[in-house]
Each structure stands twice: as C-alpha cells, then as structure tokens.
Length: 207
Image 1 (cartoon, rainbow, N blue to C red):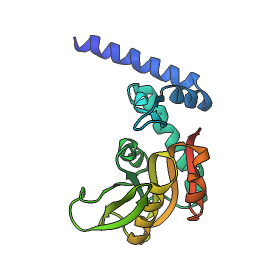
Image 2: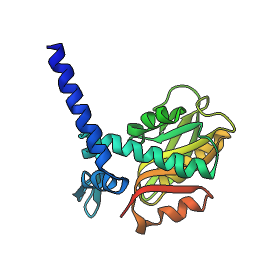
Image 3: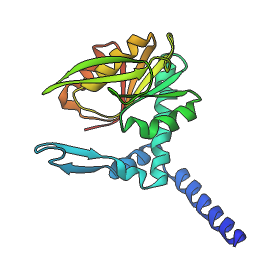
Image 4: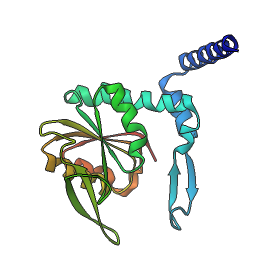
C-alpha cells in the first residue's frame, strides 16, 4: 500500500512539474483569472462581487498565485526599496495568502482586524465609510519602528480600507513600502487614493 501511494504521489508530482514547465507566466495568470467568479448583486444589488475562492480549490492555481505574488515582491517592490520585514494582511482575505507569502519571503506576518478582535494593546484608526464609520487595529508589539512593510489585500475598490490601514502602519513607526492586491477595480479611484499617500501600488489583475 505504501509503495502504491508513493508511486501515485510521484506520478502526480511529475505531472505537476511538467504542467508548470509548460506554462509561462502569462498563461498562469490567465489560468488564475479564469477561476475567479463574478457574482452579480452581491453583497447588495448593483454590485458585481469578485469571488477568488475558486482559485483555492485547485492546488496548482494556488501555487501559481503564490508564485506570482512572490515574483512581484522580489522583482519590483524589493528592487525599488529594501528587504521586506513584515507582510500585513487585511481582514479577512488578506489572511489567506499573507502567511504563505511571508514564509516564502522569510519575514513576519501580522494581521489587521476590526476593533475588538485582537488581544492586548493595539493601535487604532477610525475612518469614514459611505454610511457611518469603522475602526481598524493592529497589535502594538507586532510591527516595530523602522520595519519595512507591505500591505496585502484581495480587492482594491475605492481604497478606503487600505488608506486607513496605511495610517495605522504609520502609528507604529514602521515604513509602508507598498500595497499589494489581487485585483484592482480601475474606475473607482482607489489607485489615485493610495498613490496620494506616496506609496506604490501593485495589482495582479485590473478590471
């Protein structure tokens, strides 16, 4: 049984390696994008929700996505700046790839959450929403003054959440090098808002 299991694993691994070798970067990105669902009228009428959970149903696509994030950081962000000390992921989908990317980069992962979700002393920042306000927090001992930080999130819309989290990072004394997102909705002004903070923005997909 063990020998058969080993043979199956070797065959799958060889298939995986061959498939990766046959695909260039562009085709990998197309494969990832094809797994992103578009859900109309969610979470409210008139909104087209980008659902990238389909990517995680396929381990090869998940690896491609992680490879692409790593490529962007090492070929662009680190080249422009310095070594990354911390990946900071936004609640909640920034938590999905943040730890794995941090492991690849040999750096720390730190979460930003809504108020009251993190234990211990926290830095807090309150910001305006379309209808009301919200507050984000980061633990005070999680990011050190002078650390080089990347903010990681899934989708950039208006940039309000990333803007608030950028201000939260500044409270810690760390240096925000860049914001990295899976997908950018180009026509909603998010990029202008982030770049007005003098922070670079990198997105894998733009729609």
